[in-house]
Length: 420
Image (cartoon, rainbow, N blue to C red; front, side, top):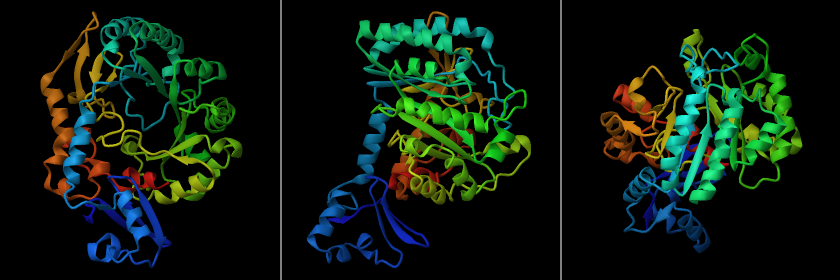
């Protein structure tokens, strides 16, 4: 046997973490513990039978003939080209009833006048293509998708009928600012196999009510906290559903985040999954964000201590949670197809369009460029040697396409959630 290539050792003030990026297994030891057994096979061999068995079963120790790198590459490529599953992210409009200063969509045409055409063409596309896949995920995004909830629900009703006729499974998710979400709307969405709903809070009350405000300037923090406390109980009996609370970190600290999380009812916390993200686009409103993606551990811990779940990335062995593979794209208001819309100014992320007859017209050179970006980690000498390869895969594909260089993901963002 030999030591796994993907064992990481992280030393903290209070303990030592041993983590395997391939298996996602983790061990916490006392801060002065001897960890040589995870670095040297001779020291591993000195352990007792039970300890050896545990380390082997969790991937910290592997067989001599096991080629972990080739396995990871195979799993990654298999997922990239998988045809059983398909995810279309609907952006029927960029219109929103909030005016967050860091919004990547700010300044672009909302396209709300095209809603009727958007869904008419989408049906033509879906009629031809959804039946090709066994599982179709329809993600509602925006803008604020609930501004057009009737049109979205009418389309989902159509999909429900189509899926019954053509024998494919469909399920849905939504990212919403939460302001328009009601009990009635949530119940209707749940009837369409809703598996995930995400709402965002910006750090703490003071920060949130400065940033995440309605277009008329009204604050939204207390309003959204009440929404969460009211709506989460409607989902507590669902087995395959995640209520995701995204906490944006922007010039805040753990104590302030604790105050925010404590406002969520105790009896609903175990049904909420926390995701922490740093606000990056602060230059758009001339402010520096002092929070850092390498300092997320205290935030995960406070969430865990208060009884919340920590969200572990759903898309294992993919380069990005939102755009990394072949079977996922955004459909914009003008029916253009994008791999990522985090920078709408970078038009090379647009890989084609759907014409008025529901037919996809691709731009092969852009599809290939995105593919090369997603696969580049397996040819990069630094990535090949990196212990975090199974969690990072060379970082953001959009960044690599734009800059011709990788932007490595941090341990805290990519790997740490798996330890909770």
